[in-house]
Length: 241
Image (cartoon, rainbow, N blue to C red):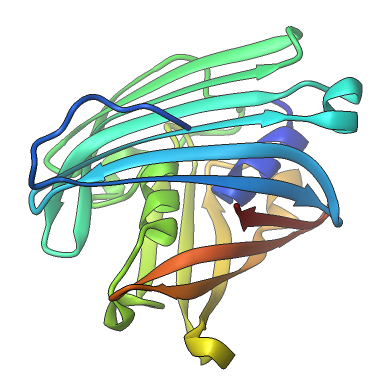
């Protein structure tokens, strides 16, 4: 995976459909987003998730569309399963399949035990020295971090996300801790996605990407409606359909 493509994935991450059948007590949600780069639509992302009091699973898919697809096709298919401990998520297995127009593809899997990544297989897309996952107990995989940010939440839970992220090679941190009330009962949570270790020196020159998410009232919960990530390549945004 190229640096530019991985940055875009991380930004969505940085940046989805059917799941297995669940119990009657499960809370299942599906969401679709238009993804834009500097205002122009470049792709679509879909996300389907299931959450109970003690477990969660989610799957996400992204593909370029329209003019961007004609210039360069890219896609990813991510999935994760795990358990919940209070308001924290504890992943157990994560998979990531990416494709860049048939020129390059990756198939990465991460296994977790006790909140620590213990097994990584596949291409992580980096030749930089890898982070030791044992130094990151409780870290989220990229999709769990994305889910924690985009899931429907109680109003009191908003703007409290501060999670280490481990992608099988690198360490980053996603924080959304600044809260701002908007009109119509909307809430904006702001923070950053910051690269910490496992990246090349070139990647670390642009280590921080500001992130903001606007949530709108949906019954008794708040739903992520739009996401903005400011990267070195321009503003990446996601807008829920």
